[in-house]
Image (cartoon, rainbow, N blue to C red; front, side, top):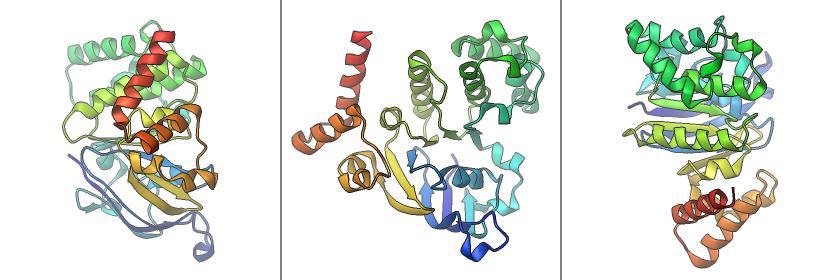
Amino acid sequence: MAEISIEDVSFSYEQDRENNFVLKNINYSILPGDSVLLLGPNGSGKTTLLKLIMGLLKPTKGKIKIDNIDTNKLSVFEISKKVSMIFQNPEKQFFAETVREELSFGLKNRGLREEEIKMLVDEVSKKFGLFEYLDRSPFDLSGGEKRRLSIASIAILDPEVLIVDEPTAGLDFQYRNLMVGILREFLKTKNKSLIIATHDIDFGLRIANKAAVIDEGKLIWNGDIVSLLKEEEIFSKGILTHTFASSLISKLILQSNVDFQKVVKGLEELAEGLM
């Protein structure tokens, strides 16, 4: 499974690059089996970093390697065989005339037989609540339906590394839970890895085992999720804002040293019981 290495990476969109870096000297590794929560305020550089990993942008300085191969030597298509990304704006990844064609496209490129494609499209479209829209244009769907289609069109390809930018935007409670289930199922496959950029800390805590925090283009903190919850200074700086759930989990861990996963599971069971 794919390993991603970010080595002293800086990036600028401007011609006067030395004074306009969006990202500055980022060093980080995503190993097989990692589920990384990428956090930081708006404009911190999270989405830019994701695009660099996908090869949609090239580092101004430094290197990004996938399985020890410099992404500068790989095409976006070659990278997409191992790493797939679900964009924050769903419409950016749509191009087919129907939902069915959108879900089928990647499978056809992989040479699957028509009957296999039909079976997978039917299965995934039902799971994401899109079956009745298979013959409609993706651009005619509602905001939440577009978000579900963007997720489904990548999930159906089952990549080695999945990158998700603001996955819960436009999703109601039912489909947020569906998304949690899908990402957990994805991670059950040995050594697959996940990168989630989000402001939704409660969603991230249900999935991630590691975290990286970016502020003003710099990686200011990284470690495991439990360690993040013990770093009150990170939150107090306004980089992250505690929700009721994350605050409760943090206090339980600090005061009682209870198991993080058991606390999350307990809160999920409580929420389900109240529905």
